[in-house]
Image 1 (spheres, helix red, strand yellow):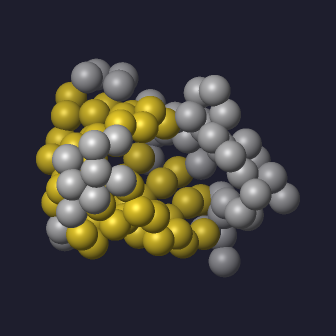
Image 2 (cartoon, one colour; image 1 turned 120 degrees about the vertical axis):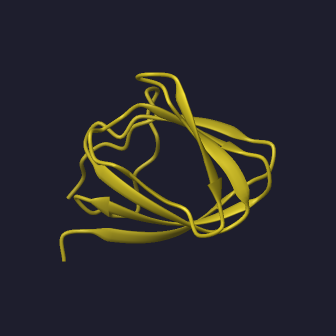
Length: 95
């Protein structure tokens, strides 16, 4: 179908740097509060229940969970399930 859909829990008090160089990502927060920091310009945006964001330019970013957050994430191209974040916070392209 050209995308993969993931239900992801982000634990309270964590901070994760990511840079999806090979994927576009859209995220919908269905529970919790936190922030996303765009590391290309150091701007920070609040996240809470009902917030959606899209990383359509492969932005390097940091996700900061003030509370536990439940996020629904969509990736294009699809993530196949065996990927792990590399040292840059990216997923490799896998078939």
